Image 1 (cartoon, one colour):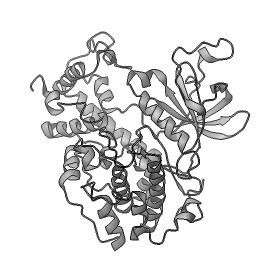
Image 2: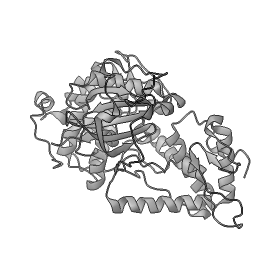
Image 3: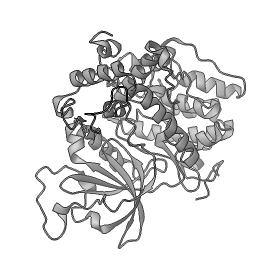
Image 4: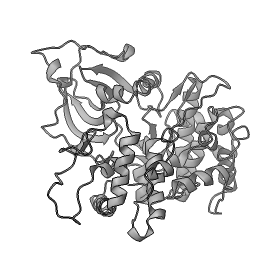
Length: 455
């Protein structure tokens, strides 16, 4: 194996998001080491909260990791690639006695007999397996959210305050809330179910670590999310921000608690939806996207994981970290971001794109709701990208002609010809697929949802 093996199979890590790079490399490993009999996990690892499903996935992932770490050349080549590719601040003595990388430490391997399987935290970090984002759990007493430096007895001045805008309430503290459980995890923090001790209201509190945000230069994404939240508090299909506050090392966003579950969860449970149900959800998504576009905001990350159902079955879009603000009229942007399955062709080509990228994503989600998988899906990410760019759209005959027509319009590879390219939301809402939708009734939630979560 050549010394630059990892750099050959992933020569430009800045070209794709980390999760995409991970998938490409994993698929390449399978091809280069067929004798290792590696079985990669499916498209969606976490999201279905059924304990048996999660346990099955954990066992599969554990088997995959053990296969990797039992291949000495593979593990060693990855160590070299990590040393080369990661900033020095993220790599702490891969060869030292602690054998640590980032915040992940392995067991001592000195003195182990030759041929035994040593723990390879590098691989675990590479696959990002330690923190399943949607694994709900009770709050660990040892994982307190109150910052000692900001409590009443010993307040410490924040040397790096973040401008949270008019939503910020400086007088609010974490101790004002009773944190009940973790309902989501992400790269920079977690989302907690919380009850305000005085007001007794139930909220979803997004808690973000300042250090992680600044270290990875993600402040602009967090501020983008804050700005979008401030603008959409009155829209029925976008999660609302009540207020925000901060401590020395954390940011807190107090949001609506939407408890009907992710659309992703319901899709996993039912595999696909009848067309009338998919149409209802697509209409509410389109209305939300049209509203964001009217504020010159591109959402850019529409996917079932970011779409929640409220207690009565209406959709709510959340997670505005990838939103792009200030896109007026025919303005474009060119940042490579989004989720692999839902990336539009122009994004993959790293070409300037505009609001029509959201209509592509709507088409991809509508396709998945009707058929059970995204339109050009492959477990091989490189092949999936090739499909998105070049493979013609193929539709089965189990949907109406209007359904076929809107999917063909939204999933048009040429953004200039895509449905919504000329008149944005107005063009989408006037499509025959939505002919029986009263948009005023939809906005005012006077249309009975096709499914009630019963929560």
